[in-house]
Amino acid sequence: MSTSGRLDGVGPVTLSFTANMRFVRPVRHFICALCALADYDEEESESVALVATEILNNSIEHGASGDDDEIDLTVEVTADRFSIEVLDPGRGGRHFASTALEQASHRPDLEEPRGRGLFLIRSYVDEMDITYDPQVGTRLRAVKARKP
Image (cartoon, rainbow, N blue to C red):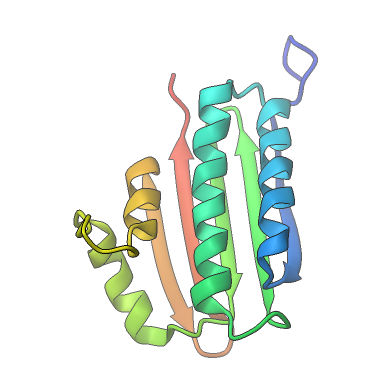
């Protein structure tokens, strides 16, 4: 416990849910609550929630083939950092995993109506990794260190 009586960190916590957008908002609220337990301020909490929301939206929209697919989210919020890992069925496959990090490091075409999600995530986090395993799916892991 910290001197404020709150937890120094929470997690890792794993949630599993079907690939339906209706779960994104409650998961976002849950992550904000975890951030509050670890004494994150509103700006930090909103940054973390934005990252989580983008990752979940991408996993549901691009990684799943339908509402019956399962998404697994593991989150850890500590005094030093926030980490999130999302595993989806991986409809994008090896090609997506091998090119996504490269694409995320380049500014997207702002004239295009889509395609900013990974760039946005990458710009908010310190570490990001995307892997694909045909037996498991696509795993996106992101870590954001807290400001000292």
